[in-house]
Image 1 (cartoon, rainbow over the protein chains, first blue to last red):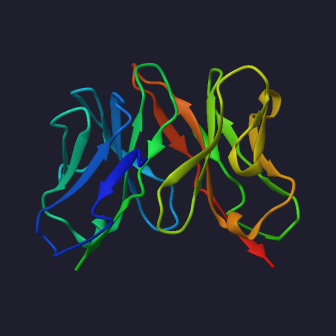
Image 2 (cartoon, rainbow over the protein chains, first blue to last red):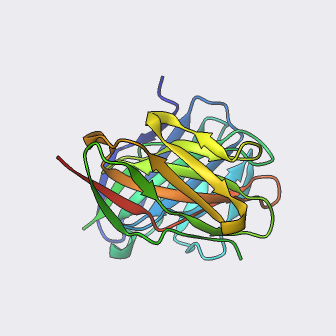
Length: 113
Length: 115
């Protein structure tokens, strides 16, 4: 009965080599979020989709992009990963417009070598 | 601007002892408040939430939290801690923007449990 699924759980990429992280949800929620969490820090929102409407945070680097081909899936693309992009990446969903609690996936731990 | 402060970076308690984790928020209107728990290498799990109504809210795993508007606080409590409660705890305030809503997290409190 997994609700928010992230693949892979661990990803190793090389400096500058593009990487894509995947998130899927079985909750049929309208809103999907991507967070970056570095060690011993709070999650930091990168962007979110309300349905197909993309909302980028002002301080999210251009190196980070996202795609949401349908309700269930959302992807995080890092075009040219740097060493500073090594982090846990968390996907979350929430139900609909207005404010509802967010449900998080288990995260993808990204290592950049 | 909205903000969340968790003043304790790290707390150690003995198994069976009571626990209180502090959270203070800054928000101009009635906030939506949350506590999440994160085990090492895992995502965040919602423990409880406050939207309105009764200021004492019950959550999963025996946790509760009390909203105190006068103190801008939403402290998390548990009467008897278990070793499995060792984790990082994040307080968050919901800051609706447009129709989507965003969470602002505190920096977290790491809980260690002594046998």
